[in-house]
Image (cartoon, rainbow, N blue to C red; front, side):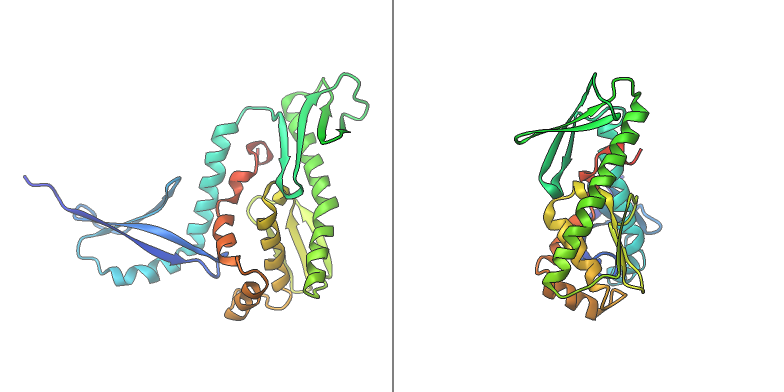
Length: 253
């Protein structure tokens, strides 16, 4: 009995309207397959189609599933990152957006359960020695969220001034799926965990939400606005799909 033939190719899925950018999809034509199968894992997006299937129909099929693909890519990145870190207590907290690295230790003389120490370029977070792991992580999450509430609105306002935007209100929350949002009233909400991302991606999120003050959709006009303000918008949007890998696992526990 001879081997069944399989062939491979790659097509690109345009993800504008679901975060921007593009995503390569590995397509495998298999004589064994009886239906289309779409999977997402650490290696990316894979599509298996039966032999004889008209590949010209794939773009419209993937277009209809692109929101699911984006969510699956983000979930995979979070899960992969979490598996590597689950069960550990952090020894450092790296806030890339602020270019800050905090060393986490236990302090015998901590009076407020968590204290900051700065000695030159060295930064320390001292946790109360009687904390269990759950209490320590809760305290660290609250501390990161407070840093975000202090830093992110100020930085968003600075970027807004560059382009003469005026958000009605800026809120910072700990979110699990979105990096930011903008309401019809002009209120912008930011994910506090943006502090873990590189500055270029944080700025991209800022510009994305500011453009929604003009276009509350993902229309052609919206992307024209975004691309004009951010020449690296497509690249950043693609990188943002895996950006949860920057967020430590203990944040999402």
